[in-house]
Image (cartoon, rainbow, N blue to C red; front, side, top):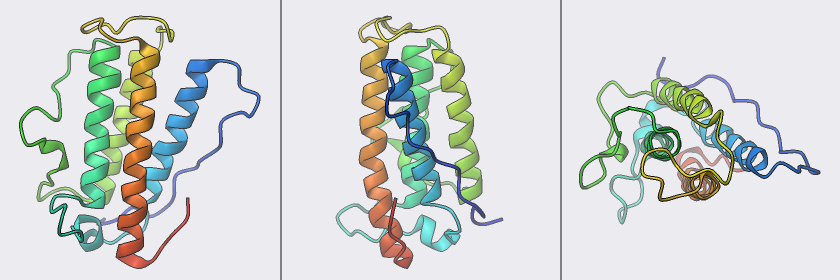
Length: 170
């Protein structure tokens, strides 16, 4: 299958939330679903297109691959201390690059697998805990960083999807 067929369910975090880390993770999940939904029913040719001359590596599929690398590094490796290979080692950052076998369905599946890894990595950590890899960050900082990074790239996906087929919205 060359594209994803359906949208991922999204829900806003609780309006009267009191658990800071849970609230951040709920907003992250909302943004994750938004990113995945930007690929829903998008043909492969549109998903791999790089329509912005000033950003020749920026494709919708590449954005989601990059978000997968972001989650692996920051949530699983840095915060959780998981012994996993980084998906963005090198310069320029290879997480934006597409492989011949990449499809919207395969990239979304890899991204969703990282969500599960991140959840497992963060399971016993609180917002004030230091990260397990280097201890240079609090879990609060790492999660806030991933939320802002994901939100920024969802904005890119908004633009790329609108350029691809005119679809707009959350």
